Length: 348
Image (cartoon, rainbow, N blue to C red; front, side, top):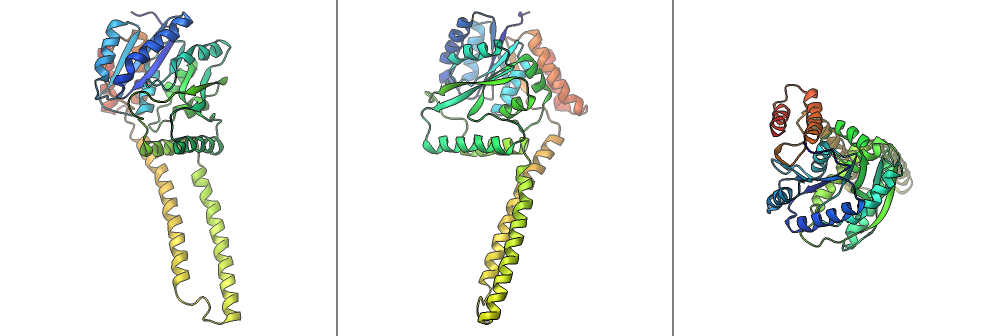
């Protein structure tokens, strides 16, 4: 049985074959500078480019590496969740394997943790190699989320962070399907601080967050931590009602003073109806997003299905069993949750 490490590094991977070896080398370099025990948990999120075979090679060469392989692609945030479920360390460090978030920053995160902080998040002071619209949209997104949510989500932060084992234990209890990890770690509370760094440009491969996924991610963030879109509807409705009364009064006065020919025809009515209809459809879309997410949660499916694990300790598997058991306990008749639990028991 593997001894419990001081640190667990969690790295979700989807088609990063060209980055895995240099990423591993950077992790080793950073953690050897710390001089304490560690494990690297690589979560294969349905890769199809040979990444999984490289993970197995690395795990065979270094017993500190554990591999969790999904049955299919479940998404970045779910892959991070799986890594947290399996992590055994006193502190868990979340980092992507694309080398845009530098492993060299890890000792600084650890130093802050040793100063007494339970969450240490990395703040992007500069984003290299990104297009102007990507930088602007990211800044607007983080500031919008910061303003409309009920919790204090730091701006310009990603999932690159260190969390204490106590925070990881709380996150294992939070099993919502539409996940926003950086918001969840803020919601947990505890003592938190940030460390600034320069985010490097991607050297190999392509971004895993194209525009479509970015929009979906933003919707998950807003609907998970804010009712602002629902609350703003009443204000817009009141404004439109006041405008309609004002326009009605103005048109009535003009017709009385300038004759019935003024504002004649149906053009004004059609334009107003189209405007009101567009607002109604938009409001229905917003309500639909919340309803769809409520329905998704009510199905009680497991967050992910693990196809295979390699190089994991018993405590690591026990952590994951606890997380799966919590999901299964919500709906004891859920065959997928039970099957996943049995599979992990066989893997141990």
